[in-house]
Amino acid sequence: MKIERRKWVLAVGEDAAPTLLKLLEAGGVAFDTVENRINPVYREYTDELPEEDFRKVVALLSQADPSRLPKADFEKVENDFKRRTDKQWQLEQAKLAEERRQAQAATEQRLLQAGLHSLGGAGTTWAARAAQIGAWWEGVKRREALENWDTVFTANRMTARQVNAKGRGGRFNIVNRYDRKDAAKEREIYLDRGPGGILARATPANSFSGPASANRTDELGLYDLSGTLLSSARPIFKQLKPYDEAVVVFTPAPTETDAQVFAAISSLDQPDTDKLREYRSKFTRLRLAQSSDMGAIFVDDNKDPKAPLRPRYGINGRVLLPGGAIVPLDETMLAKRRTDALEHSTILSSDAKALVNEIVITYRQHAAAALFPLFAQWDRDTTSYRVVDRTTLQRTGAWISDAGVWHAA
Image (cartoon, rainbow, N blue to C red; front, side, top):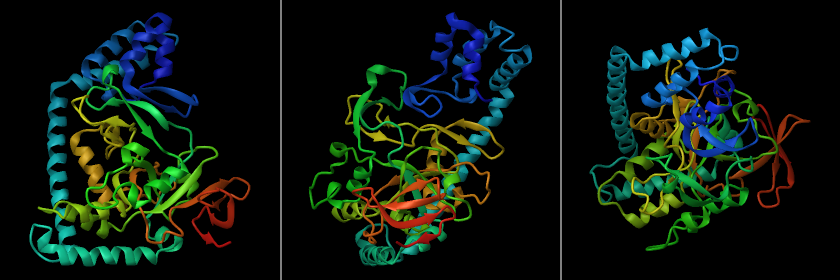
C-alpha cells in the first residue's frame, strides 16, 4: 500500500516524527518536485520496507492521534503488515518470483539468439563473425545518416530528456547500492547533466580515441542519463515529467534489431576490444527501460566502498507489476529492464492516461549529426516545441507540434 508519509508524520506527533521518518528513509537524497528542494529519498510503498522496519512503523502508528489517523486507516496499515508476514503469502510470492526468474532467463536467451540471427554468420567468437559485424556496423551508420525527425518519431524510437530541469548536477555524494543508509560509504561524483554534457557524450573521443586510450567518462561526468521513450500515438507534453523551463533533448534510440545485434556482439567470446570500444563510443542506445517511473537515484555499484567508483543510474528503485502492485526492484526485474531496452516497444502505450515510462540512455554520436541530438523548448503560448541551436540555445525557427509534426524554419 502507499505510504502516506506526511499524514503519518502529523499523526504521530513531533516527538515520534523523527523516528518515523528515519524508518521510512531509503537512503540517499534526490530533488523533490513537490517541495522544490533536495530531500532524503523516502520509501513510497510499504512493500519497500524491511519487515522489522515495517513492524516498528506499525507500532508508532498504533500510538498516533486518532483524529489525524482514524482507526480505519490504521487498520489498513496493520492488515497490510499481516499480509506481509503471512507464511502462505510469502510462499506464494516466492513461487511468483521464481516464475518471473525463469521467464526472464527465457527472454534473455531469445533475444541473444535473435541478435545473432540478425547478425548472420556462425561461431561464438568475434573473429568468426568479423565480416558480418563489419557489414552490420556500416549498415547502422548508413541508416542513421538517412534519419530525420519524422522517420524516427513515427517509428516510436524518439527519446526525450529535459536536460536543464532542476535536479542534482555538478559534484555531489552518492550512496552505496548495497548499504544505502551508511553515510561512511558515500562517494563523491561529478555529473554533467546540462546541454554541453549531452554534446560531450556525443563526442566519440571522450570515451575512445584509439588503442589504449583513456575513457574520460569519470573525469567529465558523462554518465548515462534518464529520459522517456515517446509514443507517436500520444501528445509529447503529456509523456514528459512536468518540469518548468526545461530544454528538451530529442535523440533516436536504435531499432530493436540493431539493439539486439549490438548486445549479441558484446557477448561474443574473444572480442576485438578496440573495435568494440569504438562502436560503443558511437552507438547511442538504451541501457535500461521500464513502462513506469523507475524511482531510481545514482548509486555506487560496489560492495567494497574502497573499490574504483562505479556510478550507475537505474539499478535501484521500484517496479509496477501487472495487476497494479508496486514492489522493490530485484535482480530479475533489473534484468528485465535490460531486455526491455532491447525491445523497447514493450514499454510504450497508446493510452492517453498511461504513466510516464523511464529509460536510461547512453548518449553517443549519431550519423545524422547536423540534426541529432536535437534541442527544443516548450512554448506554452503555441503549445509546441521550439527548436533551439544546440550551443547558443537560441531559437532556429523550426518547431515541433505537440502531436509530433515537424515544421521547418
